[in-house]
Length: 193
Length: 218
Image 1: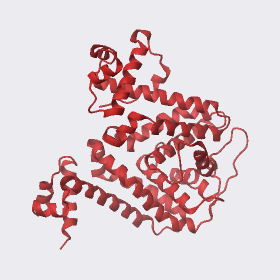
Image 2 (image 1 turned 45 degrees about the horizontal axis):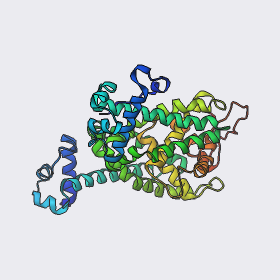
Image 3 (image 1 turned 135 degrees about the horizontal axis):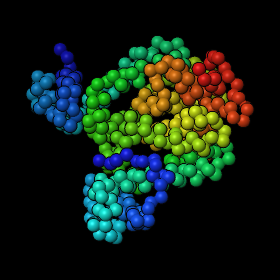
Image 4 (image 1 turned 90 degrees about the horizontal axis):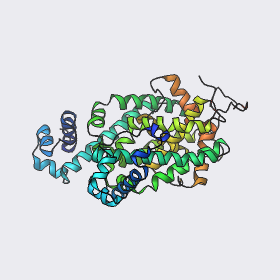
């Protein structure tokens, strides 16, 4: 029997996918989950706002959980970065509910994501630290400093790649070698591929 | 809904017939209103009163009503912003200085902008859609096109544009998500960032001094 809280989150998510963030109510979520309104309020006393925040947080953690699954077997820092960028960018583009909400109600979602972003940088940073500890770093560059820089850059590229085409492996390699690693590991970038 | 800032406005002089100073007074009046109470609560009457003119005048200068005023505000502030960083970058004598000067000035202007600060704090839904995801790609494009020529003395165009986009990305990231130990509005802190993470990633070929290249990282 699935945990009731989780059931409510999944039901709410299904409603959001159907009607969007603004139109999803506690009643909708309760009906979808097959639970009473009272039960939903018991788990989310803050009502609709708390429920919506919880769904965003849950999906957010899920996204980075999938990213972790994709890259945690990588054997080098460079491989982590290349695989991570490719996978995460594609996952952002293919996340239908995210793309729908960004199109139709960005003002509702973006403030919540911005609040999450500090935590996200911390999460990615923590993941990278062992890879950085294993690697020889540029003189004077600390592991935590490097991890923070890489983490925030990754988050930036996967949501707004700018001129970079992250579906092109050659470009991903170039990006990693020219904009992520040079300052961190102390090697100059190779000539353009 | 606010219209897109138009880069070409940077190169256009306001025709005398549209009374540049009247337009500026209205824009600055609107900015003061927004800094105080945000966009939703600001009415054209508020703007007219703050600008010391009639509502009719506001409509004449900005035929689109409130939307027209907001578009005008964005266009003016974007112009002012790029003019300010252009002055700083133009004074710089090498790549490092262009980057440090431009990034520091950009961070200062954004973080000290009263209307923008109010909105980010209290009405983020009004501004964040223009600064994130696909819209941020447009910001990166506008910024890199503007900044690239200031790096043209030392880099070919493609590399200058890449570097300009990268520097913009870095500023936006630290503004959105501050880091301990990084003070983006202090040039020495920015210099540290630039020297550590950015300069090593630049391929300077113009002066004939090539960066050594490596095939492997390990």
